[in-house]
Image (cartoon, rainbow, N blue to C red):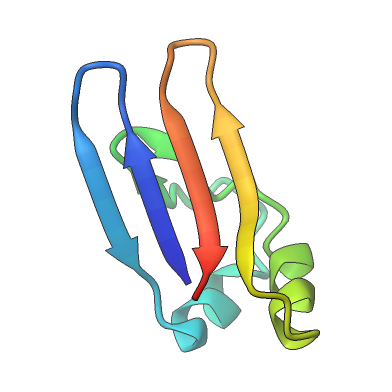
Length: 77
């Protein structure tokens, strides 16, 4: 799983997340603070993301543009 964050301040963050780690956080309620560059990714419905991955979906799974201008993409390669 790849997570790409481009902040309005010009920060660029690229994170590769092993699926084993994703299986651990998929059952969190979002309050655990899974943050990348100050953006709380714990609030995503990780069980739905994992279902897509288990079904073999490739490509972009999630795209978010925040009110602050931060851009987040999550995809499977």
